[in-house]
Length: 375
Image 1: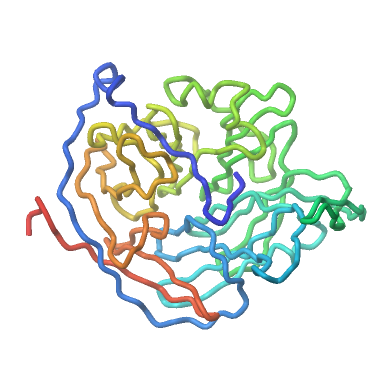
Image 2: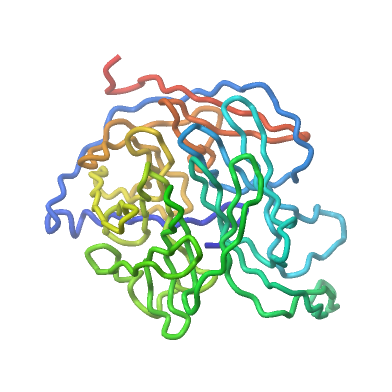
């Protein structure tokens, strides 16, 4: 579940041309078009972050936006960075302008080598990390320009996966070790304290969807079938199961978690705290395929791309009814903003952020009808 500066997320390809009739899906024409215009809020000084923002953002149901910042080597500095993943610095910005920081480097008794993702809920923020409980310095080299070699120090101690828990005010609470031989690729947290995880068995690379107890041990494996997950996900040799492949997107939905896949005609999955799985089939316009979900406090907001465009394309934002997957509205964004820049839709307002000169600027967008919409 590694998040890069522009995070690559699991998306669902809805292959209507070949499978819609077989699956009984009614395909909609394009719904009414709305334009979203943004208003800049009051800038918030916050010099304790770097200049590179991770996309996409995350959001809690109360409208608090979570954004990761990554330290990078400035161009032209002449410094060759070592081949290691920088640990992002997570910041939350509430609707009231309150900023909180989540500092992984200050965790006691753990030496974190990699942050593999986080999950923001209404009550806490959980991180999936690779770390060791001791530090054994080891010198390593790597090639740099001109045929030379650079040198850096890494931790040679045995590393495991851990789940870190923070309160929403940024206060660290605890960590738990994930029970092996399960390697987790994606993590979600339920209000009860249990976790939903997707990953694979390190012995035979068999994919797993499971519930973990609050202490990181296995509570219940959830059955993965071709009716729930695509064949590309359930195949043991698929790159989705490898440490640096792709993983499904998990989105908080009340007391449930929604799962989004890519490259398949599989439905959205809504997983309850008890492990029950409900299918949601989206009635996207002909040939369009799902790229990601945008967190929302009502209905479903999603990004989909037309035929021939992959998951990296900008796509179009749609609003869908959760009960039957029908498309209600589609949106175009003003000011050159792209769908991955939308953190969430809260109270029908599109929330985003800008950053520059040590200041975070909240943005709120409202939708006005353009074509085919009832004014």
